[in-house]
Length: 129
Image (cartoon, rainbow, N blue to C red; front, top):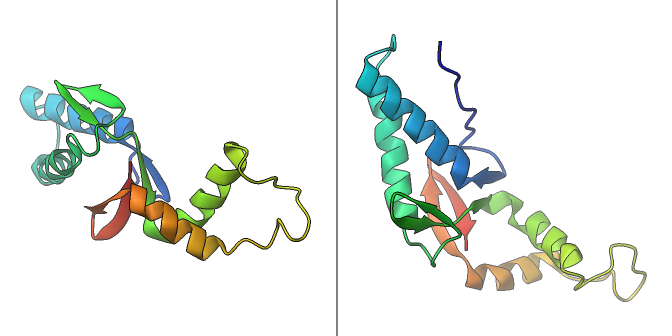
């Protein structure tokens, strides 16, 4: 029996490579006829999502001749993402004391979002770059 790629389209962060892997898995199942339930609905939704992401702001992942953004960040998680990104790139020190620990992260996240594109995933807004 084929393995099933885990894909949570409600996660805080989604990796496009997981979407692609699940899409390819469903394609293979559809082509082989080796499935109990038809994957057509899920396959159609993933195709729609991949079409929306195709070529979005260049992208870092190449698949079937097009480029896709690797990371999708859920809107409700974007503030935490912005803070972690700032720490990861050395823009802030996670152990900093006042006044460096007084950043308005809601405002910082909103400003960072200007460099990102919105996409809809199963009715939820995600940002990608």
